[in-house]
Image (cartoon, rainbow, N blue to C red):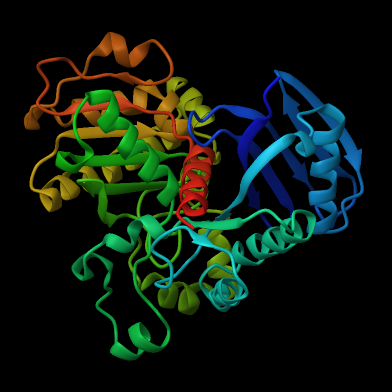
Length: 399
């Protein structure tokens, strides 16, 4: 039996570590897992292979221990990493600032730069760094590749990435729009072109990545030219617990009328706003259930989400100069037919025509606009792990 060959994709957070062993050519997932509660009591290891899920309770003191637990799970339940030709370990890194526009082979200099960028992503980059260092120790002879959420958006023109703020902020403190979900937008825009049978280089596409975190991106010929998230993942669309676009004067107003501190304000915008703030639930499925039952708060939440989506789709069509494809992806985008319909039907004046049956039935990749529609509307499940594996393999092969 031939040996497996693949990329181990690692997504390390502050207290969790997700992993997948992926064939970078086909996207086949040989095994995947999740290690939760790193550094906390009662850690949990999940490992899934061949449709079988194994759940273990383990003490997981730190990320090095998490990587050891991951390796032991592969050994116990398969495939044994000793029997796999590991091309690389591909790491999701949230923020690469202006320093990284491409996936990058990890070096001491790269690690130092990612550490320097921690102020731009204080909740994410530290965990990403710990994951890289732990896998370096566990797999010292395997190339480590960093794939940055922000890299895809480094092609944005200055007009799109620049905030109209004092020069000192922009130059000394690196204040600008960076964007996130880059690996998802890269994968989905490329896959949409393949499904349409058209060269990526000739397509003007808007991708709507709609999950608990949500972002819209205008993709012109495979290059990001605008995106809804900014310096942080708070800007843009309405999300599960994040508000999206706000008046910058809100912070000062709430400080004076309610005594909110910076910490209070940040916590409210990160964890208490969005769908949760509007309806009492951060889960769009629950919002839809309450809306169907006549809950006015749920209806308002749905209407605000749709309005914001239309705002961005229309704006990005203008930025692109035309619109060839509109693509829905991520958990809500892939599964919420009512939300898709509410957006697409409001675009009828632009020649967009929904195929009601295709939208309401089926799963996976599909076109949900009619053949007569001037804009192709697609559902494309995202596959960020495959995108990370593909990019990591390209870096290794190019050495």
